[in-house]
Amino acid sequence: MLIYENSQDPGLFEGEIEVDESYFGGTRKGKRERGAGSKVPVFGLLKRNGKVYACIIPNAKADTLIPIIREKVKPDSIVYTDSFKSYNALDVSEFTHYRINHSKTFVNDKNHINGIENFWNQAKRHLRKFNGVPKEHFHFYLKECEWRFNHSDPKSQLLQLKQWVKQGLN
Image (cartoon, rainbow, N blue to C red; front, side, top):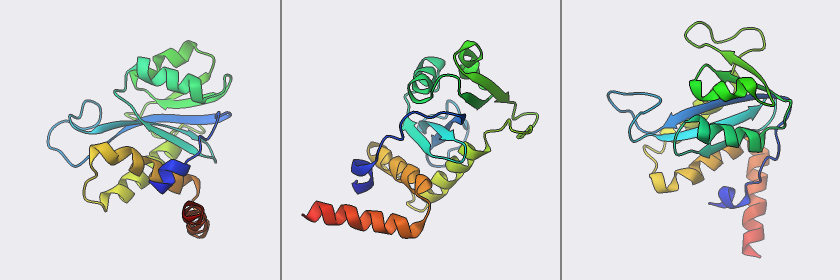
């Protein structure tokens, strides 16, 4: 909760931005990814060589994703996505939009979303050790994963946490 309360909005992203959605939850037979029943849908943006922003979303429809992109990404930025249809509106928007078709390839020169995929991998690996996270508290855990990614040096993480605890005691 300390990290959640002290998390700062990363501000407006500009430059090269990777965008993707992911689904968090325990292993489940049957459907995976989009439409995966009880899993929690999460949307993320990553400035290449920079910060990540992640938020829980009600669904992965264009009406949900495009407003977040418009709110968080500066016009004229380059936005990289996969070929998910919800990103179609970006083709005629104020952004330069590149898609990567994961059924054919994962990287085509600078066209990839490997950075945000790396964040999803790290977050899921970190959360796996808790052996399940209650849905009502998932937003706290997600912000912790975001904070850890954005402040990757363990020594500076520890210093920051100590400082927040000290401020809370005063």
